[in-house]
Amino acid sequence: MSEKLNIVLFGPPGAGKGTQSAFLIDRYGLMHLSTGDLLRAEIHAETDLGKAARELMDAGELVADHIVIGMIRNKMEANLDAKGFIFDGFPRTRAQAEALDGMLNAKSEPITCMLALEVPEEELVKRLLGRGATSGRSDDQDEGVIRKRINEYEEKTAPLKEYYASQGKYKGIDGVGSIEDITSRLVEAIG
Image (cartoon, rainbow, N blue to C red; front, side, top):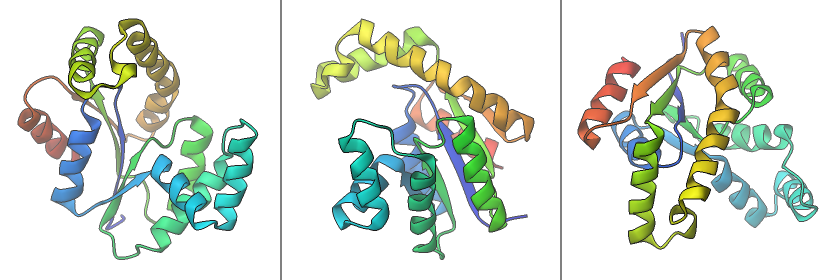
């Protein structure tokens, strides 16, 4: 069994991933692995992976899974003393989940669990419209756009829920209540 705590954190827009991941990072000493942040950093540093990613992005294409996995590997190898990692925004597909498992299992540091914050759609819409009113984010001000983002999340993550459930690692977490209540549910699920 791995000593490291490797968590995949999922949840639809407005579920509170940002708030909860900050707490989990703090409580468990985890390193945050956001694929968006990694891509920007590799491109800025003009690494080989960053150059390959920029070429694909400039051509309007998605960055290939092996490039993203390479970036994650580099970040993990640069932080060998980390107590574990919280994966945010990755994996998004079954192929990515399988590639991530392959890399982590080779290091004997498998995913510990997939925590999915579950919030009813109407509550998400209410939260996002409220956030849009205070943050000025245009994507949080249009109910049609919000519902489309939620539906897209549900369609894309359903296969991942099944993937991690088949390994006994999927844990659905009730994402409604106070921040503290939700945090305590996450901590209990981690064990």
